[in-house]
Structures are given as C-alpha cells and as structure tokens.
Image 1 (tube, rainbow, N blue to C red):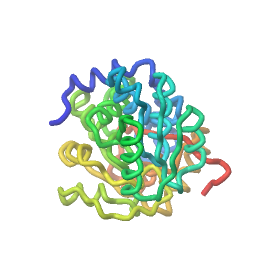
Image 2 (image 1 turned 90 degrees about the vertical axis):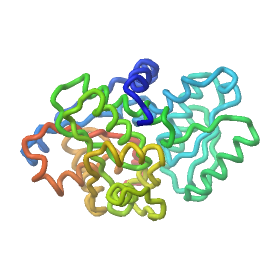
Image 3 (image 1 turned 30 degrees about the vertical axis):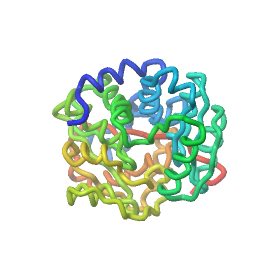
Length: 312
C-alpha cells in the first residue's frame, strides 16, 4: 500500500486552517425513496466551492520556502485550478494555471479571483500536460498534479475522515470518480478508520474509464469522455487506480440522461447548489436502489461551482 494511516492522519492535522469541516445533511426524500438513511457531505461549502482544497493544501503545505518562491503550477478543468490558486494566494506566491478552452466559465473566473495567471489549452489531457510542463520550464515553478500523487490522495482522504468523526456506522460512502484522488483517499480512510464501511465509486456511462479498468484490473487510458459532468472527464490516475482496484467495493454507472435531472432534484430538495459531477452518485445509486435498502449512506458532494448563466 502506498499510503499508511499515519500519512492520512498527518494530512488531516496539516490541513486544518485551510479546509472547512463541512456538514452532513440528511436527505429525507431520498431516505424515503430508497428505504435507507441517506446523507450528503457538503464539500461544496469549502471556500473555493469544492473538495479539491483538501489535496492542494496537503501538497502545498509540504513544500519548502524555496519551492514555494518559484510559484505553483497546475492543469485542471476547474476545481483543482481554484484550489491551487487559493493556496498560492494564502502562501504568498504566484499560481500559473492551465485550463481547457471549454472550461466552466465560473471556475475560470474563480481561479483568476485568487490571482492566478490562466493559460487556455486544447481540451485534451496531452495538451494540458504540454502547456504545464512548458510553464514549469520557463518559470522554475512546481507542478501540483490534480490527482495522481500520494500527497493529493492523502489530502482528499480527509473528507471521509471527517465523515467518520461526525457520525458512526456508515455502511456505504459514495464518491464521484474522475481522476480518482477522492475515491482512492476515501477507500483508504475507510480501510484505516471505519473498516465496516464499503466505498463505492460513481461514474458517468459516457466517461467510464474507471469502471472498465476496475472490472478488468488494468487501467484504461483510451475512453473519450463526453459527459455534462465536467469534473469527471479526466482519466483515472495511476496512483489512485492502484488503490481503487484493491480497496473500492464497486463502481456504479450513471446514465447520462439522468445526471442533470438529479442535479436539479437535489437543488430543489436540499436548497443547495451542486455541480453535475456531484449528481452522478445519486443517478447511479437510484438505478441500484434495491441494493442499498436499510443502509446508512453518505454521498460526497464534490463541488457547487455552477455557471448559472449557462445551465444545462
């Protein structure tokens, strides 16, 4: 195993002051619908509006002053971009962010709000990496990867760790699956701190590289993502995948046509804004609700950065 319980515990204490301990909210309408006890972990209430602050904080806070002085660099479709920009602002350094040209406008503006310099690129992971590496060569700055690093995974694990400190007897913890940092971290958090909890991933049918890799045991790199869930369009990273294939109970798929309706349903019922990516677990769980009757379930809400001028 790459990460041990001590690594997660240190990430938990290290990031205090940069992450909020976000609340659990019971969803009574889903508890009735699924004959279960259903909660959502409201990480859209982080200051940047997304869980990504956890991993970015854990990474940035382990850098030396010399490393920080050269600036922070990342590539991201949105929420990790904001997290790195936020940490750079708080730590008094520069942020250079590479974002796909089709990025959510609000996420782009929020990264700029924290003082980041934005470089737009083609909407491919290859071009994102090319541009980020170019900036690193030119500036000497350090790249903070969006998900494929042990420090990122350990930081994301603090979300589930908070849940296990807030409530007991969680049967199922569900996280959306994009790059895999949150799902991998959640699986490790359950393994070390709540051994009876099963961790499930939820992925869009039209971006199911994680599902295919989990079923075959071999990381899938060639699925073309075409989903409204913009935060889940990336391929699962090598490090997260090595954890997911060993420690996650299963990955369930959401039909593309169900994602937006579930997003609006959660808005209406909870009075909280969530992103399409955060609606994916609800769409996936609803398809297999017969498997979760009588269970205590927590769904990780990964973000609430929705451009209200461009609603799907």
